Image 1 (cartoon, rainbow, N blue to C red):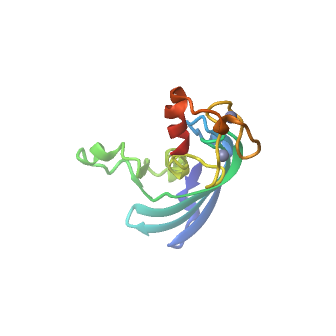
Image 2: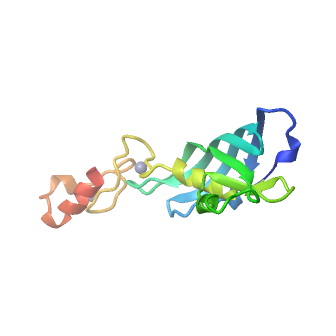
Length: 172
Ligand SMILES: [Zn+2]
Ligand SMILES: [Zn+2]
């Protein structure tokens, strides 16, 4: 995920980076597969700093938290950051060197690695609770049947108090 700033002559500059999905660390079990990730950048230069406005877009296979079925999802997230020289940091500035919104280059090497930015944006693009559809009916809390595709008789029977908590969870 290397961006070479030397390739830009006129600013603002635009760039689309196709990210190898294999380089993304999803860090979540409900991300089953990442199929495509693009980062669209608009780069403005001011002095020795580069202001980047980015938009991450991607597609992934997520696991629905209600019915546990895998489904394809479109993901988008903003990814704004500033690229600047690490050499010119004052000691005060070094406090922000861990700030995820900054990316640094060293010396005359104007290549920067955007892995942290891209991974952060990807994580933020994920829904807190992925849903295959708004109306997903989830699994029957008693027998585990997928109520989107199947039926069971559990609801007709006496409600079992032991399952109420779980049922509430699924009905949230
Ligand atoms: Zn579902
Ligand atoms: Zn059931």
